[in-house]
Image 1 (cartoon, rainbow, N blue to C red):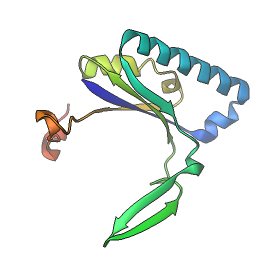
Image 2: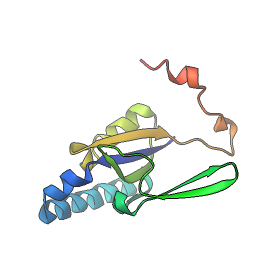
Image 3: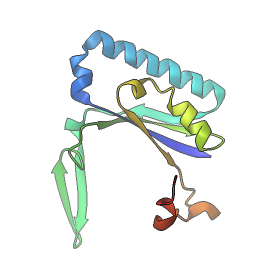
Length: 132
């Protein structure tokens, strides 16, 4: 099954760590991604430009509204993603736990829906609330 691992961390906190730390972390991410690719578990992935480069688009009453900046102000910003192939959620959690920036922020794991197949229906909202 495909899972999207969204990488979040505080850009300000990462900047405070300095360029050497940043370069080291980027090297770790590249090596980790290459290892996943070689194992057939990484389908795609990329780092994102800083949140200051974001543009948010909303359509209301057929009008397009564009705002500079992210969708919402948060403590942690979306910094990148890994699209992985995993046997199940537990396997995806094991992979996400090894993503280097997880040490500084968080990784959100989302199952990818196949909009062309039988699994195209989203999990009903009420059912999604019953996770223990």
